[in-house]
Length: 423
Image 1 (cartoon, rainbow, N blue to C red):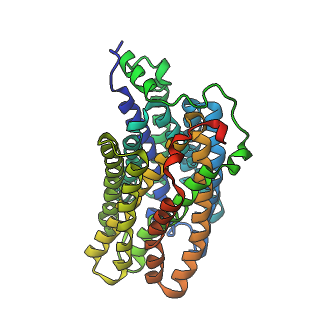
Image 2 (cartoon, helix red, strand yellow):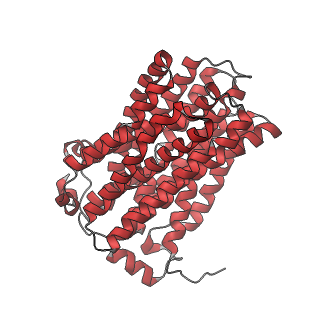
Image 3 (cartoon, rainbow, N blue to C red):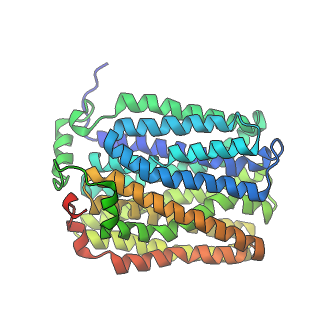
């Protein structure tokens, strides 16, 4: 069947990568949600659970860098397909193992695949969207992470009730394989797309920077000498450490401190992730709104970052209030993070040409995740020695610290040096 080319096909592409991001987060939330049920089959100590999470983060961070570079070399279509095929197979393996070692290996393999997801999505956005629409496109695909996390608690609880924990991994892995089929049917570069109209192709092309086009890729190591690369890393490394703390410890906190079982966790744990999705969309919308009102690009990015950072100290109150209010403050913190993260990721497309976006996003994600891995070790020690209160205090102050770095490091003139020659 021949379809008439669309003037808004780029938003269908955005929906497709948002779906991939939702699957990504559904897959990674399987373990934190199902850990109580898994322990009935496989004996896992708290130390081993922490080690398994560290294996995931190490693989995820490493592949974020390698995956970003791979996607720049393979192209977004093939690169994204390879990544999601890998992590979907790894997710299925989770459902087949019967030991802590097997579970740790499966988690490591999952991290290797999922590490390429966000660099691939960033590259797709840089290829399909003009600069003025990129922040809202980032907001939409970033909201996919919240959608996957929102789906996880009630969906996994239902699957475990009807079958067992193994099927939560197997079914979500099969979902990823189905996405790859759809991806190959729908995706190509705008210039080659049969679904995008000539008017839309011209609109996208006119909004792209020609800087760096036709120039050879710089060496991978040369990116470490670029000040802008370190800027995007530093403004994200502290906030992301807090984010991984929230997503890995929320279900455990609700069980350990609030006494919720798997069914009750399914009823409550999705709420903060729903607000995280609102934060993703709000951040993208607000930045684009400011741009349309002729606010400078630099200021239109900094205002949402500042508003987001102001929400995170609410998490300091989580341990001292009733359960409903704790969920409210969790929700404020996660809304604030995703608002912040949407703009922080968009900065890469503001500062670098599209052929470098995958590599820079990958390097950023790698070092940011390594930071989160080290923070996870620290926060586990803090919780073991002093409980959750100090942990939430530390986590609640990391976004304001990130915003201070934004103000110090992100200068207005940086947004116009969008050229591979500066790398």
